[in-house]
Amino acid sequence: NQNLLELQQNPEYWPTQLGNYQGNRYSQLDQINRDNVNDLRSVWQFSTGVLRGHEGGPLYVGDGRLYIHTPFPNKVFALDLEDEGRVIWSYEPDQDSRVIPVMCCDTVNRGLAYADGRLFLGQADNTLIALDAETGELLWDVSNGDHSVGETNTMSPLVVHDKVIVGISGGEYGIRGHITAYDVESGEMAWRGYSTGPDDEVLIDPSVTLMMGEPIGEADLGLTTWPEGEWERGGGAPWGWVTYDPDLDLIYYGTGNPGTWNPEQRTKDGEPADNKWAITVFARDPNDGSVKWVYQKVPFDEWDYDGVNENQLIDVEFNGEERKGLAIIDRTGFGFLLDRETGELLVAEKFAPETNWADSYDMETGRPNVNEQYSTYRQGVNVNTTDICPTAMGAKNMQPSAYSPKTGLLYAGINRICMNYEPYETDYVAGQPYVGATLTMMPAPLQNGGMEGRMGSFIAWDPVAGEVVWEIDERFAVWSGALATAGDLAFYGTLEGHVKAVDIETGEELWRFKTPSGIIGNVNTFMHEGKQYVGVLSGVGGWAGIGLAAGLEDPEEGLGAVGVFSALGDYTKLGGVLTVFALPD
Ligand SMILES: O=C(O)c1cc(C(=O)O)c2c(n1)C(=O)C(=O)c1cc(C(=O)O)[nH]c1-2
Image (cartoon, rainbow, N blue to C red; front, side):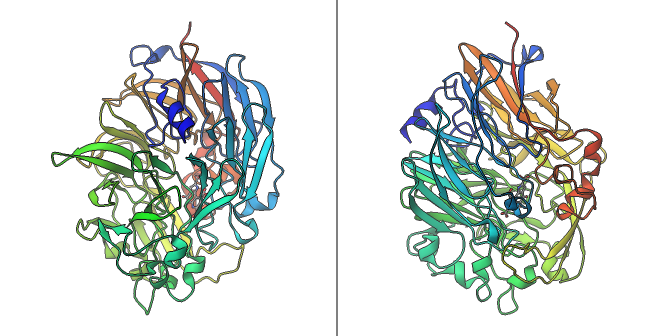
C-alpha cells in the first residue's frame, strides 16, 4: 500500500503494529537515548475502562492523535496526543459475548491497522471492520468466521496494496485455519488460503511452490499427511503477525498447532504423519494468495508449538554473501534464519539452552531431530511425559521481537518454562475444546547460572551466528513486545508492570517505570512537533495472565498456566491503561 510505504519511511511515525512492513519494531528516533533516558517520565495516562489483557499498542500517523484499541469488547479510541489523551472519538462494536468462552488465551486483541485514512480492526467475533480515522464512523464490516464453531479473532490485520489481510484463531477448537484478503474499499473477499486440505484450497501449486528451495512435487500434502478427514478440523490457525516484503511482493506468516493436542489421533496408518501445513511458515503473493514457498518448522507436533511467531525480514551477510533473510525467534526454543526468496533454511540454533524436545535441526531436510524421551507420542496416550522444555507456551510466544540494523541483533522477551504433558483421547464436538492433553508447568532449570526460579528473560540474539549475545533474567515470562531505537536503547515491559529501557549493546538497565498493571502490550515510539514519545498499553492477561484475567484458581486450568503463574497476583492486578512518556522540556 503506497500510503503505508510513505508513512513507514517517516521515522516520526509508527504506522503499523510492528513499526514497519518488515516487522522490525525499530525506530530511527534518537532524541531519547542512553545518555538521557534516565529523565524519561510519564506525561499522561489514559484508562481504557477494560479489565482483561491488553496486547498490541498505539499507532501514530502524524495527525496529532494516538489510535488504540482494547481486548473484548474491542473499543477503539482516537486520543489527542497534545491534550493529555483527550478522547476525540471512540467506537464500540456490538458483539455477542458468547465468543468469550471460546477464546483460548484471554480476550486479547493485537491491534489496529491503518491505511489511507482508515482504521481496520479484527473483532473477537470475527467481524472485520473499517473505520474512518477522522471521525470513527463505521465504513464497512464483514464476517470472517463463526464463533459458534470455535472460530475467533485476536490478530492485527495488515494492509498490503488494496487488500486487508487477516487470519483466524481456534486451534484449540478443531477449526480449519485460513488467511483471507478483503478489499480495502468495499470489504469484499479477494482470496482465501487454507492451512490444511487440498492444494487448490491452500493455493499451492506443487510444481511451482517451493519447500527447502525445491518444488514440493507431491500433490495435496495438506490432505495426505492426515488420517482420514482430520485435516478438516486440523487447526493451523494463523493468529500471529503478518510481515511483507514490498520488493519481492510477498507476505509471510506462520500457522499454529495441528488439532488435537493428542498426537496419537493425528497418526496415519499407525505412523506419525506430518499434518501439513500446521506450524508452517508461508510466503504468499498478496495479490492472489498463491504460495511461493513453505517451511514446516514442526512436522507432527507433539507439544503445541504453534508456529505463528513473527517473521522478521532482515538483510544479512551469510557465508560472505548478501542474503535476503527471514529471522524467527521461535516458540520451539530455536532461532531460525531462512532465505526469504526461496524458503531455504540457513540457521537453526537454540536460544533457550534448556530446550530438550529436539537436539538440533537436520539442515538438509529442515526437520528437527526429536528427542525420544520428550516425545509425547512415543511415551504414549495417558502417559505423563515430564520435564519437556520449552512449555507449550513456547520459549517465545506472540510477544514480537525488535531488530536493530545498527547492531544486527534481534531483541526479544522470552519464556523460561518447562512442562509435563499427558495426551488423552478426545472427541470432536463443534464449538467445544478439542485439546486432548493435560499440562502442568514449572520454571525451566538453570543451565548457565542465572536467577533461581526465574520464568523469563530478555535477550539479544545474533540471527546469523545463532548465539545469545546478552540476556537479562526476569521473575516472570516477558510477554511484552520489544522496541529497538537509534538512541541505542531497547525497551520492553514485564508482567509485574515495569517498562524498562536497557543499553542495546550491553543489556544494562538504564531506566524503569511501574505502570498500573502487568504489560503484555508492545512498547512503541513516535515523534510529534519535535518531541519523541514512548507509548505502551499495560493491562495483564494473555495466556500467561489467564488466571488473573479469567479469575481461574485450579493450577491445571488455563491449560496449565494458572499454576506456574500463581504468584503473579502478588505483584499486579487487572486494568487497561495507556502510558505516554517523554523527556522534560
Ligand atoms: O491455536 C490457536 O488458535 C491459538 C490462538 C491464540 C490466540 O488467538 O490468542 C493463542 C494460541 N493459539 C496459543 O497457542 C498461545 O500460546 C497463545 C497465547 C496468546 C496470548 O495472547 O497470550 N494467544 C494464544
